[in-house]
Amino acid sequence: METKKTALHDQHVASGAKMVPFAGFVMPIQYSGILDETLAVRRNVGVFDVSHMGEFEFRGADAEKFLNRMTTNNVAKLEVGQVQYSSMLYDDGGMVDDLLVYRFEDRYVMVVNASNIDKDYRWLEEHLDGDVELKDISDRTTLLAIQGPRAIELVRGITDTPLDEMAYYHFREDEAGGVPAWISRTGYTGEDGFEIYACRDDSERLWEVVWEAGRPLGLKPVGLGARDLLRLEASYCLYGNDIDQTTNPIEAGLSWIVKTKKKGGFIGLEPVLKARGKPHRRLVGFVLNGKGIARHSADIFHDTGKVGQVTSGGYSPTLDKSIGLGYIDKPYDETGTVIEVDLRGRRIPAEVIQTPFYRRE
Image (cartoon, rainbow, N blue to C red; front, side):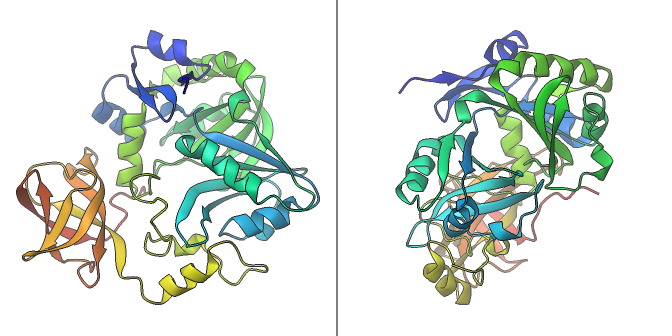
């Protein structure tokens, strides 16, 4: 399969980014360093090119009904200008993907994970029903995420959209630096911030105006390494690590996006109802009490027996601790439980703690 580049590839290289293959794209993993970029977002403001994400457009009289059947949250509750975090499930309750749904006046747009674009599109296409037109607009869409305490100050400098009136998980169709865009108060870092969607042809202009407004504020470019660490600190799930086709959303702590009583139900409803009663394991957070980094797929022990597995881990510069997420069997998932994480043959003591690890003031 051909490796793709975002429209801003040359700008990243010129900025000194270390480029790596990721989800079929060549993407910046870091610029000044993962820890430095993580702290820049927590303390100030950073910009990410996340144009590798997928976008699907839905039009037609039955678009709402179709999306409500395909996703676990209640699309019928969305108002124009609102965004919804949701998921799609297989028939057995395993997760196809976690995603966002945007409601426009004349259409809906679904934003999916880059690694799942082709799979998700096929799944939706296989289930198309009624008056619904599905279109993949991923390749013609650029997406910048501007995140951090000074994000609103930066974005205010490039748009006339009244940002103070925009609630979290809402968006407006407007302009950013003279470029037609949707400006969305969303992000996956745990900080306040905005995501700006624009036409691929306008990518360079948008990048320039963001930097013109951001340079006086100390804006830093941020790669996928820091993005992963930021979402881990905020205890957000990453598809392929913390959730996948073997995961039920209930055990992943995502019951809040699963509306089991909505009209018409959704694919995977019955397995979800069973899991809601008594899930045998649960995704929890833990802090290592020794040196080392908990790696994906490392085993978790309690006394002499294995009770779980790590899904994500890393050193948190915000907390100055080594943290991780993992699935742990009941009853060892309770907060305060002392566990051990296997790090290449060494069992490092750890403690199950309440998540998120980090919550902004």
